[in-house]
Length: 108
Figure 1: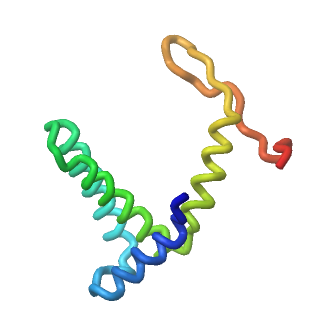
Figure 2: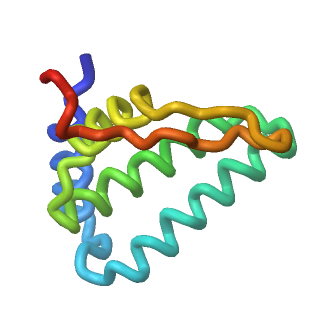
């Protein structure tokens, strides 16, 4: 299993070692968004580098998470669990959430 927290720390350390930004949060969000746009273009144009572009998105996201002191692995696991317990119903052709996850009733 992959240890996202460790990779997150490695990405941050690489940013420090190579002199990349670790303080301008607005810039990091914009760069992450730009990588997502590049991944979309690779998909849209059926390019061979789609996987690499998706990796770039993930690297930027993990780096940003470390800068912001967010344990993204933990947050992902919580969100996956939350989504698993939500209930949806097709209403007027749209998949609509009808019941929200209540973590107080979760039997952990």
